[in-house]
Length: 314
Length: 310
Ligand SMILES: [Zn+2]
Image (cartoon, rainbow over the protein chains, first blue to last red):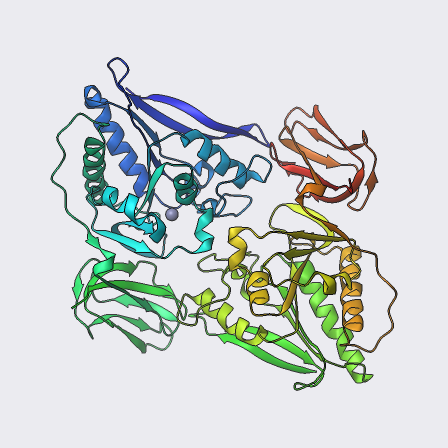
């Protein structure tokens, strides 16, 4: 059975605490030599819920298999707890994206203090898995995103996670204010998982990632189980990502389902006018490949992302 | 005065977004040039007010033949947010001032930023009227980041008491000031007021300092009173006073007050029992430049900032 602990708390103005809780699972046997510690993190964005389901599934597994534990497993299902219970992506009141407030500081405003509290709670973890579910606009296949500078350390770990895609991207300075960057900087190998869509739950992705997590923990010696037979993700360096942005404002109506293969020149969807009844534009695949991102929220402006295709080099 | 659309963007259902510019002086003037950007957020009402006030002021000056250089004012960048009580871009909640230098093939707000930035490039001076990024209110101060291209000397011509001159944070590389400086415009921000409201004293001070800047930098023929001598401060000069308790916050002083060590600046009351739970006392002498402005305060929020010279 895990131990539920409050790792960060701060008074709110009117008779309430803001709190971050974790459930900690430890080895039932005597102290394990050089035992490793992993942190499973969800809800940095209050409108993303896929990670909460994964936390449940993992907790359920650990409760029934506690004798397999050889390390410390911390589950943090709700970092932005105010936001999760009120469909607010950002930290309410301040309207600040918590994932742009790291590493944070005790001397700064509430979001920075929360960030600081999160970092301190997880400091010393060998590994951290930060689970996101895109946002309310886009649906994503299970993928891990890694900054180029971390490629060597993190890609081998990501490959264990039973995900579909590993996306190594050029680091932008702005991303230095993310949770993952802050944790990687202090020596916790941190993977960012994106899967599903905001405000919804996709059960299959939760089970897929659970297998990946169990596999990763088996490889790291945190669980005394046989490694699982997991899928090997597509690696971004073998191909290219094409972005499909709306050319006109309107209502985006997809014709292809998420996660399907598309051919170059194929119609991915239409942008239509609800007022005039016209089809304003066809969204055409500029390359062939897998449609790994697809817009879920139909209202678009010019520039709104409607999809992303990954195509392998020929 | 030439009034024109810098950016127009169609919307699926509402009327198009228009970012309007007001240009004074000769378009191809040999004199200096300046662009002043107002409300980038939907709660930057003070900034909108100062920028539009400047449009009216310069309209009259232009009729009097007093404009020397080229002056562009953009009072409202994010009119969509202003018109619906939002802070950020209403659909995807992105902050327009986190989208620079922009990207013409990118997301909606990256495109807006890119189109706006195309217009802003090439000006000699660039002023960003900014609100605070927290729940505070403050004296007008200049925020100048050390990008390597900044110009501290010109900023002193504003005659504003405090110039906060400091290294930039990672998130600031996506903001207008940093990118504008990289494109060799002498860009700086004036931060002032309280978001969502108009402070007339602060607005007047910023208006006056902008007029002073225009005059001293050869853009406007107008004699001005001297401003204050600026104090250049960095984070070491600032003392932060935090609320150790959450509750109802009562301030006893105004920003710009010179306080002595030991002076009581405010208090916090338990929001349910009404009991006073904390007195906030100045630990040093200095000038209060900034204070928390919402009546409900959070534990560890910064209640006051005091600038000291020592
Ligand atoms: Zn997220």
